[in-house]
Image 1 (cartoon, rainbow over the protein chains, first blue to last red):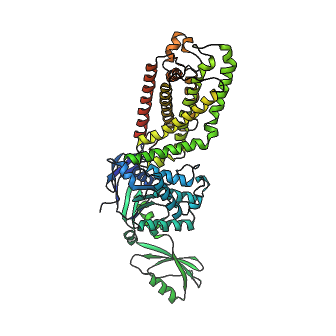
Image 2 (spheres, each protein chain N blue to C red):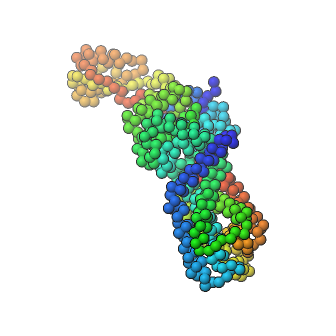
Image 3 (tube, one colour):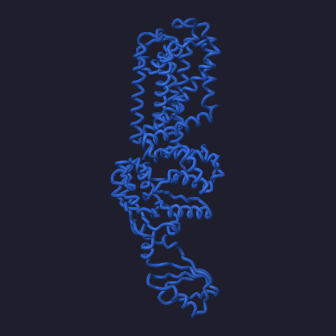
Length: 305
Length: 257
């Protein structure tokens, strides 16, 4: 099966001489939910900009399904729906008109564009706001409006550049559910995000880009498997003694009823519980000190720096 | 995109443009009607009655074609420059750039949007002029062709201005410091015969001279320049403006990074 997106040796040098991409290559398979991660200025938005024609590439090849952007960019564009990082609609236009017009730009007859606009505005909970000027929407609603707009031509590849930035937790969860639903229906999704728990919850594959280079391109499961250590915070019922020592583990008392334990790859957290049990310390709750993916991300990015 | 899809994209842009200027008609249509009424009263009735004949017509009859053309030029230009720069400024132009709409359809959509506003304002100004004088059209064909070519030319010029503009100041500099002087020096208020030979020759570099005189020929049947030459010059300027606009879109200058 042909990949949804193939990027080969893609590079971009801006007019001021800044080399944003240094010959990156990556592949996203059809039906995948792919996370593109990287620190600010790593090259994520440049990559997305090239794919959807807002940025001109310096060299390299980009193919969307069967369409090479150098040979048939209009065909490639038809496959893509883009949800950019910044709001990029006319704030004075009505919500419904913004979505319908986008359908028109993709060549859809106005009746079909209106049907689709209603469908996606309903699905994203914006139908009641259809006659509002878009400037009157909340931040979360504006993000959902951009998703509805990107879906009006029912693209096979949906690219979202930090879609949940600044969105409250409830709304973020609702957007996750919606994205998982359309992914299950067959839409390939590429997502950039700074919320690593978002990538872990939604995505199956991950690409990490840093300083214009891909430093990792693998499945999330494989990436986490390579994690060498995890740090847990345990909340105890009894007070944690100052001189607590669990052989083979690094532990540190944080507060009277809280301690931090580092578990290396190959070790088992059960051993920690057994040692604490022998000392008469019961554990009431436990959590990761940091998101596991976040630890791996920091390791990879710092390692490349 | 096939032809049908391209037409759908074109009609979407055009519909959006027309809705935009109709929604804010007090800023887009009304000012021209008021300004031109003042021109008719001041230059046509009050001052014009003391000037006497110009080119064999009353001064009011002489200035009406030029003032109608002035309204067409300024409105078709300002519609495209403000609309396209606005879409650049709020980044909504990206909606079009990421779509498969061909560049010539994007250009046509905005330009025809500007043309329709120019025509609508021309109609309003013509109706206003009928309160001050009687209009007898010498050649409807010439009038229609000149109006369409002129509004297209200045809509294209507005598009080029919008692409280069970085701020709202930039979209008012050209109309204020270039377009308005060209209009006033383009024979709207006087016949070229009144100019010394040197300035008459210099005036032939001004595209507004051909536009105003070709339109005046359509209305009154008189012109300071030959009609075929005027049409040729308008067509030449239009082809240059269209080619340059397409070059800007195809290279993505000031639109793509």
